[in-house]
Image 1 (cartoon, chains in turn blue, green):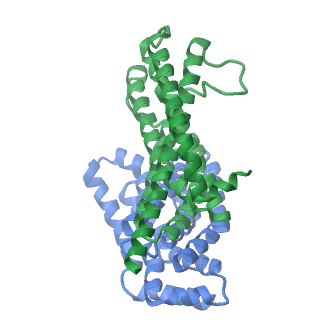
Image 2 (cartoon, chains in turn blue, yellow):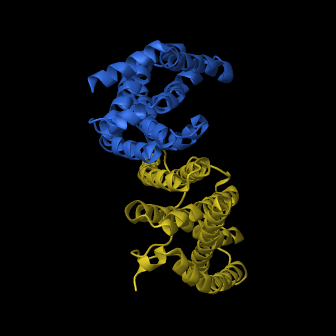
Length: 218
Length: 242
């Protein structure tokens, strides 16, 4: 299991693309927003939590088709399916490595980008906390979407249509936690809901992903 | 005699062929009666005026939009558990109808909302969750359209339907948390003392029955079409082999 995780991480970092690309996209998105809505600090600080969350969502989406596509093309996925390791575990590891290469860097970069959007400093803690809790769910859901479309030639566009509606509850609770935190309201309820979604995704979605993979490999 | 007999496409075609004209005529009858009764023979609401009459389209279509997804969920489960092709095809057939019903509910809601709330659209929980449902329908149909092998497509869309149901439900309650509502609560329910006043209630019930029957007729029709497409495909494949 650890060998698989290390292999995935190495591939993501070395093969050029996946790792830095999501982060760069996140940065560009955050830079674009002030050009779109104007440099007014009041407006920016109000929409900052939402922009950062939507940005995290979209940058997660970018690297989804890399989760299984290359493995599917060179036959690694067939080997994984016949390996003694259950496919469910493989799907979990894939999601984990996706999170380590996109969700975690995004979470760490978000406070600095929050400064660019003049986000109130009280919200930084809530932003990091909500992203840290919420992005694993995004990776899990993304893995499921990638598993559904692995057999398709150009699944990239389809994946976004399938996965984005599934992201909505996570986005709602995540952005709400930051917004409430920024306004000094109690935000822990939203954070708890977010944690519940992540825990539920981690418990159930590997089965759905593995089922979808088996159907695609049959 | 059990429902599983209709897993046999031939039996399904026979029975649905007989049933379809009856259901279609009944649906037409109910719709005509319900809508004409509703539009012309009920009084105006004392505050909403005649705009209230769009309820005869809005409520039944919203009802069917949700129930169509529910039916897809059940038929997807049947496909995953018992692998009856008719079931998978019925789910495929129901999706565009559900999508259309969602769209009708959204559009009539917007037309109704303009004079009543002063806006076509508000980010109200009910409205928002319907928009999300619309997106789920889109994704489901896009997945069906994208996969060539029909069995794989049925499998994958079924899994998507299961996961999607959970998340659609989750979104429904998440948006409650996110924003306060403008939309009124349920006007019709079985366990409440007070519903809409009888003058509106009876034609509404007829209109709902009409929409249910219309949905049934369309699902039967579309499932029959899908089965025929399957058969035609099999015939073509056989021709090519010989």
